[in-house]
Amino acid sequence: MRIVSYSLEEERDYGFLVSRTEFVPREFVESALGLSLPKDVKALLPDRELIQLIESVLKGTKMETLPLNGVHLEPPISNPGKIICLGLNYVDHVEEAEQEISEGLPIFLKPATSLTGPYDPIVKPKFVKQLDYEIELAVVIADRCKDVETSEAQYHVFGYMIMNDVSARDIQFRDGQWTRGKIFDTFAPVGPWLVSADEIGNPHRLRMLTRVNGEIRQNSSTANMILKIPEIISILSQGMTLEPGDIISTGTPGGVGIFWKPKPRLLSPGDTVEMWIEKIGSIRNVVITEE
Image 1 (cartoon, one colour):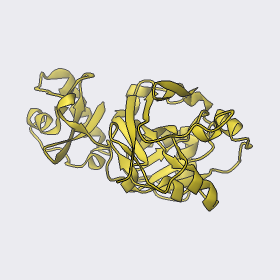
Image 2 (cartoon, helix red, strand yellow; image 1 turned 90 degrees about the vertical axis):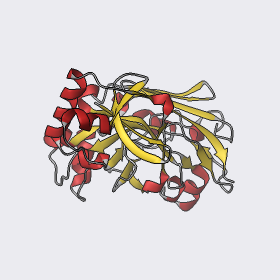
Image 3 (cartoon, rainbow, N blue to C red; image 1 turned 180 degrees about the horizontal axis):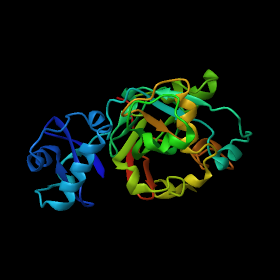
């Protein structure tokens, strides 16, 4: 299942991708099922029986579709309770940062206001001097859980999407902690849709690429994660309750702009940042200056 969130004539809704170019809106599925679906994607995620019904009707019933290019794609989850991000969780990124692999779990939080759509602009604040990109595999939690065993963690994953953990490096490094350099509006492009875990299979064998103006900057794999997704979920759930729609962004591989050799290669207004993760798709965002 691939869930797309979209807006059309100022109305927001969601639907289900059936091809690269077409989707079935929620209301069309409601008509086929003869029952109402939750109006919020977050409310749909924990209802496994309903999701199975939707999948069966999408596979077995011929329904009217709409073209993707006729709507504006929004963040697949627009109102998460939490966006939890990991730092230094890829071997190649730790190496380029000249750090050591930590026994801890460096995390920071982004607010929901940092989210933006898969093809929307990244807005660079005028005072930010060092704007950077980070491709990440984002996990979306399916149901409320706490104190999760590693062996059971995958059961609580609904699916995956791409996140660009946009970073203001000058602020991040000056502050001595990461949060403020990561939280600005549009600093979390996500999408292009939410892909259910069954379509992904093993999330630790996915190729990932970042291009800036067509040039490859990050070329790695989720196999390079240090802490794997079940471990991450288990550790986080020991200290907090995870809820439907919570987003966990699992860290970035090597190739970020700030550590590029022989000198940093950071983002400027007009740059186009494209990110692709195998089995998910791609997002594309243009950097603009704050008005």
